[in-house]
Image: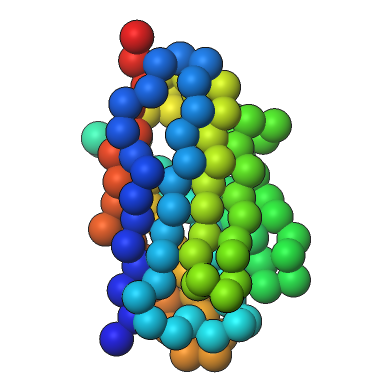
Amino acid sequence: QVQLVESGGGLAQPGGSLRLSCAASGSIGNIYNARWYRQTPGKQRELVAGVLTTGSTTYAASVKGRFTISRDAPRNTVYLQMNSLKPEDTAVYYCNVFSYNNNQNYWGQGTQVTVSS
């Protein structure tokens, strides 16, 4: 059974950087879309960034130019590099993968990111 394990969250100062990782414990195949979402209390989960199996990427307007999504296929790992962090980036970040090989949608458990001085 595939599980997504996120890491890299924590406390950062405004203007700082963090890199989130999302590692799949099992095989998700080589044809999948991966996305990072975030959620704050009382708000709906929002899409932050996504990478398609083609390699095409998409970003929320609020993070474009500051965040970069990437993946390491041999390691079954997806990353979110977050630079120039702002207090409004504070949220629980979730990794999501849809595997076309497995025809399954997977979610990570979430990792807290707090941006504060």
